[in-house]
Image: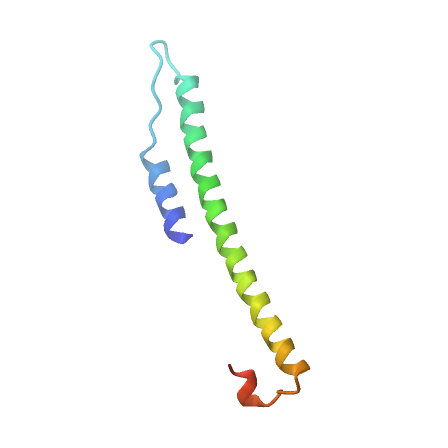
Length: 82
C-alpha cells in the first residue's frame, strides 16, 4: 500500500489545472482531476480489502485446523506445529 500511496503523492505533486482566460482555473478540469484521484484511492482500497480478506480466510483455516487437532486429542506440540 505504501507504494500506491507514494504514487498518489507523486501524482498530486505533478497536478496542474487549466487556467481560464480571465483568471482562476477551469472548474471542469479540477473536477476531472479530483475524479481521477478518487478512482485511484478506490482502487487502492479494493486491493487492501482483498488482501485483508485473504489474510482472514487463511487465519480462519488455521483456526479450524487447530480446533480439529484439539478435538481429535492430538494436542501434542508436534501436532500443533503442522
